[in-house]
Image (cartoon, helix red, strand yellow):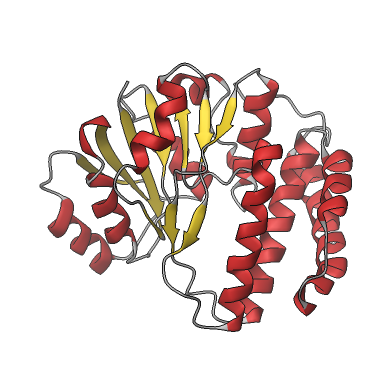
Length: 281
């Protein structure tokens, strides 16, 4: 088995470091597919200049949401394994081998690993995000539906069999939806704690930005759970995990109900019957 690393981005100059790290993963790497969601001219020109002539890089112009760009990129994958690395992540040597080992050994159909800060947090807001991420990855081994798509590996045939990414969840939650559909199909997932990537979250340098991101993520997750008939069970699970360790955590009492209300209104528009929409694929 060989792997294609898919990196989606939109006007993110950090993607160059992500690509360099992916290209250093050795013989297991088949190629790196860059799914550009519609970046501006200068950034695209720089990527083409730096990476366009490299034999294992394909830069594809695939405008759209993250879900749409990933779906389009999946059509271009020619290897048995599809691996997702986010534009703000950098993979150390040996990462690809560690992340895909359970699949290559026949023990899993998809895997995921954790992240760690690329640099020490510079602001209190960034430190808060780093702490939240650590708590998320502590929960993922017990609940693979929570696995973020960045730093994950999949059997390509599994992704295609379950229908890829639902473009109706383009505003967020598409990763939770894929996880739920994969698990429901009988796919085996494994969390690989030593498949760590360095995550740059320095752009989240204010609590206003953090709250905006939390609101978006909560709504996206709620839409995915409504679609899959999991909102009640997932809400109860989140309630059990909830602890107040920072004053910002208290705002979840408002953010989550508002996100669920918005998600329900959205789901009523885009799904025939909330919680019982037809599966993709």
